[in-house]
Length: 205
Length: 205
DNA sequence: CCTGAGCCATTTGTATACAATAAACGGGTC
DNA sequence: GACCCGTTTATTGTATACAAATGGCTCAGG
Image 1 (cartoon, chains in turn cyan, yellow, purple, blue):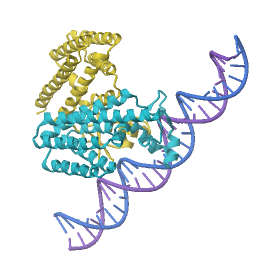
Image 2: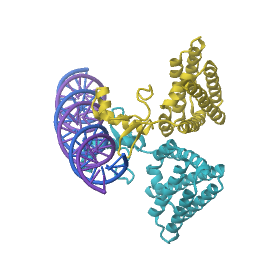
Image 3: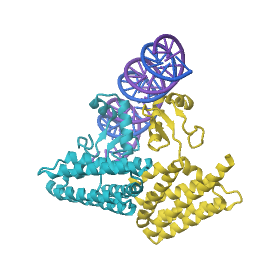
């Protein structure tokens, strides 16, 4: 609901109201709120009331910066640990991306799914449960989720080419190369988001 | 209880048993288990049963590696953002450390408290709620907690000197320097832990 | 018109009961 | 003797009730 924008930033989330809305009791709602709080999608007041987090520009930059650092670390580790099956899976998913964006009207949904799977395999190949745990907190966030919605053809194809580079770096077992590409890959996503956001802002004015 | 070793690694944690032991109902116990699971102190089976996580050597190395990376990033950011009051607080806490370890019998408990406060100020000065959130997951872990218990006088004083270097880097607003020192600081802690652990292992045999 | 105190409404924290599911055990069969 | 299946038991998931704490509102007073 937060990602879909049904719950505007800053609005209060009452456990009971959510329970009613989801047709469950407060108990599972509480569990979900605690998790979302850990993911920083929800902030809690001193008196433990829950509100949808509102993301400042600094927050967004912060999230991308950390994501770049952690994903680069994942790529660095994965380069020397990835196995043949995982490498092949990366190629398959990136081919899926290529197909999804080849049409006149790119299939963003399919792109997102393959993109998610691609990055997930890298995290898995990194073989660090802690790193995986930290990253899942950063990627399930509204900004990241919406970024690709605003990708133009140019950015979609660039993303695909960067994935190809990553596969090449993994195939060569070059940790430094893989980390560098990944850093650039995430930073580019950040600037793509900024551009799209700037457009949205102008449209809103 | 996990940190104190009362609950051995691998042992199952029944919500009801813990509730009885802590004289509360299952509800708050469940909340705690969910948080500890996020902190990777607890792992859950497919059927959602909880067990105390057992840490392999790789897990420990992994945790230190990530902590080094994130704390270095915190130091990097803090260097250009720290204010005079925070800088002074760092000096005060490091002086507290100096006093605590000056005696013939070092006061480890006081050392730990000042050390925790010292690192906390840096994270605060970094001004990144996300980074802070990620780091709290890594520092409340059994290995980190026990490391200082095994510090010898040499390591305690080295830690103090490294803190002094950090303060100097912050005073100069030198982000790269601060990050480098912090990386070394955490890596040294890792090797100190390894040495202490090797000693314990030999004693156990 | 502003301020503050007290009361009421809202919201969260905790306890408990019941339902659903998975593990453990035992009896039977091959 | 090993293995499969049904039953029992343990454990977690969910719903609900009540207690505690917090926010906001009203009304009195300056």
